[in-house]
Image 1 (cartoon, helix red, strand yellow):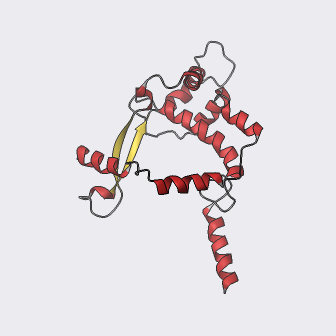
Image 2 (cartoon, rainbow, N blue to C red):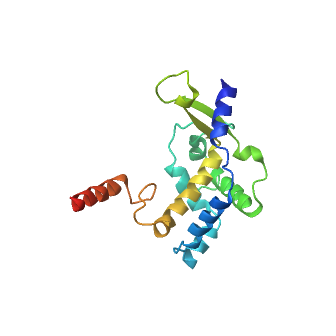
Image 3 (cartoon, one colour):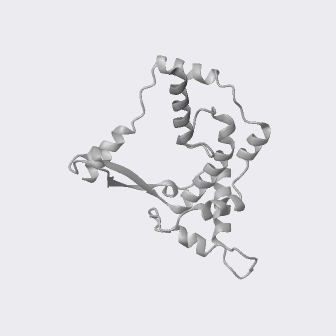
Length: 190
């Protein structure tokens, strides 16, 4: 079962062949992008993820989520994070922030840090068909905290870069906006 699942989902993720037509289309699209980051946003995005951003990412993380291969859950980091100025208290989050700074400066030194384990979750229909299972990759919590901090930072600047009609996954925009726009267009056409 493991081999069947791995083969099926690996084939779905294969990179498409890069054709001349695809390269031209991509170049055309990229050449027509007019939105750009401000210098302030560039500097903000280029700066290292600090303790405060790491803390916000940890606080935004839900307890009870499955950890990765190292088995360390969010609750561990929340328990051993120093929330008050107590010199005797261990602050694991401060150590984790230093690791993140090192990763940003020198790159990822260990592949184990970014490895995950794929689990298949049944969706619906025939349980005997592999396409009816959704792959979920469990990655280490320390890696999830870092990616959450990066995603939060990106979420702050994304609305200024992405067209106003793009509603999905943009803070402050929702599916209702797209639905309402479609309804208004239909009413106008009638």
